[in-house]
Length: 104
Image (tube, rainbow, N blue to C red; front, side, top):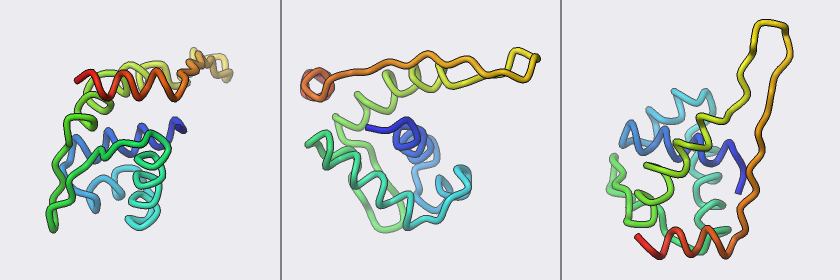
């Protein structure tokens, strides 16, 4: 799982639409869709129900994008004014993520 995939998933959750999420993330819609499919494959869980022009989060998608991903996004790099960026990296095992997704 990559940080940008979480960011893309949160954008989809917030907009309810791949096109608007892609615009917000400044990437092509196709790239956004491919990254979300890769994330679903990596986690072994369907995160989104694709409904024509709109998207609905599955239970696993809600568990990932509405709580843990928001926490991770809050830990994104931020400048403290000196031109340097600080990072806090959290590494979660695939089994932990599956437990998290399956417990919702």
